[in-house]
Amino acid sequence: MSGVATSMDQSSSDRPPRRAPWWRRVGIAPLCAIVILAVMILAAVFAPLVAPYNPNSPDLLAALQGPSAAHPLGTDALGRDTLSRLIYGGRTTLLGPIVVILLSTVLGLLLGVAAAWRGGSIDTVISRIVDVLFSIPGIVFALVTVAILGAGLGSVVIGLTIAYTPYAARVIRGGALRERRMPYISAAWIQGRSGSTIARRHLVPNIRPLILAQAVAALGFAVIDLASMSFLGLGVQPPTPDWGLMVKSGLDSAVRGQPTEVIVASVAIALFVGAVTVLGDRLSTGVNK
Image (tube, rainbow, N blue to C red; front, side, top):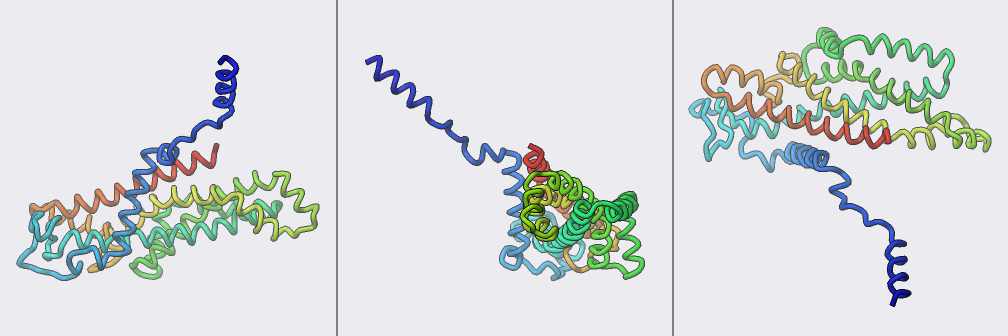
């Protein structure tokens, strides 16, 4: 019997440890963040199917109504359904920042990898340019672009893309420098592969988690910057639904006794930025491990 017990103990000790459920490995906070982002993005994508009303259809007889069965989040000063404008507003509010992050990440990747890979004078020149751009607040670039091209979402996107590129370039350059010292890079050189091939097929894929973490972390700031420009009347222009514009118009409605619009738009921005921040921190933690 003792021999049987011993063999059972050995077999149980040889078993690999049971992995925790995937949702525990991800974490409760990141999981909630993913759910929030998924709901917001899906609602924006399928806005024509989800929104109960046309977001730009005014009804002056229903202006500044509180939440009701017909209008769950009330109406604005022109009688437009707040819920419908919130859902459609997610399109412009999220599309602009996503374009900014995509463009700035691509430009930052080109500059960062070129600086780290080539080194020497190229690294010095790119680093100095990045340092100069890095010292200028992003909102300044947006204001200058608006002054040159005029108000509108496109102008703000161009300005913020220029502003966010140095952030991406600096992070990616640091990761590329660390990766360039790895043994597999030297092995690829010995095999006679070209520098561009090594960088494209080996170096960039290995810093992809870093690039993703940086992009997600920057997305929240881009949302705030674009919403701020719309709030100032320099970004998205009326009557296009936008969360920043809703905060601006909602303040006027709040003075007239109906604060629902400004509250729901502010909460939507805060929820999205908070969810992106949590997810970005989780990705950054995974990269640094």
